[in-house]
Length: 541
Image (cartoon, rainbow, N blue to C red; front, side, top):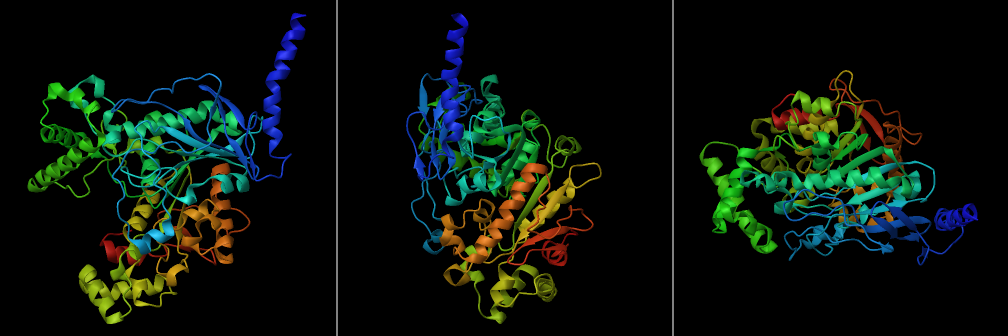
């Protein structure tokens, strides 16, 4: 009788699991939601999502909790089933009160709603509660280390990527700006983790993935972290974090190779001291920072950053770009990215890295110059007597160059950073590195957006139709998105982005500079813009 009772209990437990695994195959309705649908156990309790066009979708799942300036801890457990069908809150940040209409149009931002209790993630999967193990792709959003969220852009939706690649997609919210990177370590052991709390959140999200993602159909031993802009900087940071080692096996950095060093702790401690001055607080009143309003804290933090920046400038020390971000604290980040110990830490991690051809160039109306004489005059302010050589090098690198603006808006900074990061990583005995350059031009709004910052995102996530204001939604965009999303999926699966839809994509080396040029006609070029970069930066590439 006892064995019969146990058997009945086991059958009862298995029923919802069977239902979840089969739901996507037994309905043609676009949305399936309700009791017993898309219900998955996690370490903290059961969560209930929904099924959209056959893809299991979960939003706003808490992966950790944290008090202000404290390290993240495991989330509170719950009983029953937690509804997880809408995005969770985003980290507080500067409110958006005005936009540049012409540039806002293609982005279609969703600013979300803010709450400091923002440590949540979202999951898309083709199947749940099954034994199949799929590659897991964990996305870190852009916005530097100060703003943004997993809901900010329509391109971040993971449904199409999960469906196309039979992969599990995870997107993450975490602490940003002063909440994630105020270094209070000088004020006692209680605050020893404050300097990189925002990055520790990301590690906590990967720990959640390791412990729970199998229930969502994912393979915890095959995790790729990928991110764009600030998200790429976060990927780079975790490649340098010993506590993240083993939590991911591959990395993708998109237009985010700008972190050459982490801010030294002697500077970040000056910022926290200046913050106390701004708030008229003594070191003994440090705990007051945990309770004052975010608005007041944020305003004082900005003043403190400016004050320290001016002081550093007066001392002849570099202060450009001083802001909230990763801190070389000797603990979470014990090395600088160029240190051999840091390079060795991620030696076994395959890397896919690249940028877009024009990045921020199209954001500047002045770059839309239609008169070549005026364009040359503007370029001369940047390149001086190297201007003619620059023009020649651009035409050689990009034979399609036709208008004055084509010379004006080419990105140098992100591209040079990507080459530098790839060259540093591509050493003997290390995991492979693959390089790309996205050169496709959007036809929208008379083509003014070109291949601007973020333009590749709808292609990577196969979200052309979701992002028609950015991509135009045409046949060529869909065709390229198919090629790019499959490359990202292949890389997540095997560490190699090659697939039948692309020409052979060789590994990058500093010598060959092999680069996949993503455009209507994809092709491999070796060191495609080496002369342009060397003229523009004055450095050997």
